[in-house]
Every structure is written in C-alpha cells, then in structure tokens.
Length: 402
Ligand code: KIV
Ligand code: ZN
Image (cartoon, rainbow, N blue to C red):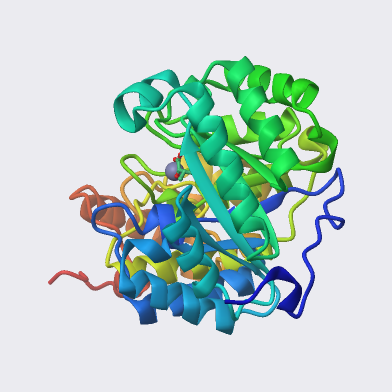
C-alpha cells in the first residue's frame, strides 16, 4: 500500500481562499446509494469524467468496503481523473480505511472521508458507544488514514443533532489528529437555515485549530431545505459544500449541486464567494445522470428541468419578448441550455404566436393573424402543446390534426 509521501502530488489546502467554496460532489456515493440510482462501474466512470469536466473540486467516488464492485469503481476513477481530488468513504474501522487507501492508490490527489456518528441518538442506539469511545475511535481512525492518502476529511454523522460542545470536542481532536476538512452533516434533513448558521459560527469560534481547516456542509432534503441550509452554512463560513447532481441521494436526496452553484453565481454580491464550476456543463451533466440512471428529471426542477427556461402564459411570453429580464434571472446558455423556449399552448398570446410564425417564415397580416389565433386557441384548448409543424399547417390554412 502506498503511503502519502509516495503519491506524485502533495496534498494542499493552501489554494482555499476565503472567497472560494469547494464543491464536493457525492452523486456517485450518497446519490448512488438511493434506491433507483445505482450505477455500474462503466456508468460511474463516465459520470466521473463528466464531473471533472464540470469542475468539481472533490469527487466522492464510492465506499470501497461496501462491495468489490464499488472498490473497483473507485480504483478505476482514481486512475482516470487528473485535476479532481478523488475521495473514498470509510467508517472509522481499520478494514474500511485500508481498503479506501488501496482503492485510491492511483489517484493524483486522494482523500479518505471518515465518518462516525456523534449524536446522542446514534451513540446510544446505533453505535452503543460512550462519548469517550467515539472520541478515541475517531482519533485512531484519522491517525491511521492520515498516512495513507493526501488528505483526510472527518464527518460527525448526525452533527446537527449533536450537543454543540461535544461536537467541538470531537472536531478539535480531529484537527489535532490530522483531519483537514471537518464536515457537519445534517444527516436526516432536520435543521433550518437559522440553526445551521448558529452551529457553524459556534464551531468556527470554538474548535481548536479552526483556522487551519475547511468547514463543510452536507445537507439532506427531508424537509426541502437542503439547498437553503447549505447556502446558510456558506454564509456562516463553510468553504466546502457537499452536494449531488439533480439533488439525488438518500431518501429525499442531498442538496442539488446545480442549485447551490447557480445561487452562488446569480446572487454573487449577496454571498461574496465563487466556485470553480463551469456552469455551462450543468445541463449536460444533469442529462447524463438521468440517462445513466434511467431516472427522469422533474419538469419543474430548478436550473435543469424542462420548464426552467420555458414560458407558456401570454403575459409572461409578451414580457419575455420585450425584455428577457422580466421573467428570467439567468441566461439558459449559462447553464448549458441552448435557448429559452416560448411554449405554444392554451395560455399563449398573440404576440408570441406572431413571433413564432415570423420565425417560421410566415408574415400574416392582422386579419390573418386573428384567424390563425382563433384556430390555434381552439386546438390548444384541448390541452396540447402546438409545435412548429402544427403552426406551419395553421398558417397555410390547414387543420394540423385533420
Ligand atoms: O448524511 C451523512 O451523514 C453522510 C455521511 C456519511 C457524511 O452521508
Ligand atoms: Zn449523506
């Protein structure tokens, strides 16, 4: 097994400046863990290459101890990526740590992500461990992992339901043992933006060695607040956000990467931080994941859903034809979508119909437009979207459905 010194690129957190948030993608681990989203080795590798093109800083490739196939997938991804830190998940157990390290051997930048529950509920009912045992277990695991990869992340599972003073104790011990990223997961999606701000501010004030490490958020979406909570954590000093493409993940999912990234970009003056994501790759990445998993993206999904840049109502279409800023706060091209679509349906108005007919080469005068509009509404009232070929037929005086 390689030791840290034998890897070809040394670990470095020096590039983490106050104004940049690292994007840690866990689509291939937490996302893939959810029912309906499992991917085979080839699919995971294809997805990992696309995530590298997207520009994620850290890619969690899997949980090597979970299965031989997951081990092989992590090893293959570790050997294939160039610029992205490849991360493998491990429980605080020697076997897990050693197999994560072996799977990461070929990585140019490797990270072992250790996790251990810290909340009273998990300590008592899941681990059967005292506080002291949790502390010792975490420290031993971090010390072991530290020599086997470039960097170690420690996650206090169920952090948001952990006593804050115990969390400070565990995190301070984790820093002393060699962890460079401290992750406070909202494992069950229970927290609120106000609460997570309080916790991150408290941790940054009290953890010994806080200034040497990166604090990270990892929010689940059980109450639909994963993205809001992640952004709140960034406002309180988190400089890594763990998230997934299309928000896939355990139960209701994880914070959606595309939403976090575009919120930070569109509201840059508000947040004052940036990411290294090439946002034009967001839509292609979302489509690729949908294709590889066979799980469609909901039409109304923010940023990447089919309706995200589509307008059907006459009032909105009229506004968009005058100035796109009336009903869009970002350009579709910025997320990799070719253009805004004005969908021709029963809510559409004359202005959009005229514009679309003109784009198709028709030049109806006002009277002809009135007549076409009447027939268009009669058809669209049946709830159907009318496509260009339907509009061509209407303009030529034919019934497209005859
Ligand atoms: O949700 C969670 O707590 C996790 C940890 C393994 C980080 O996914
Ligand atoms: Zn999780």
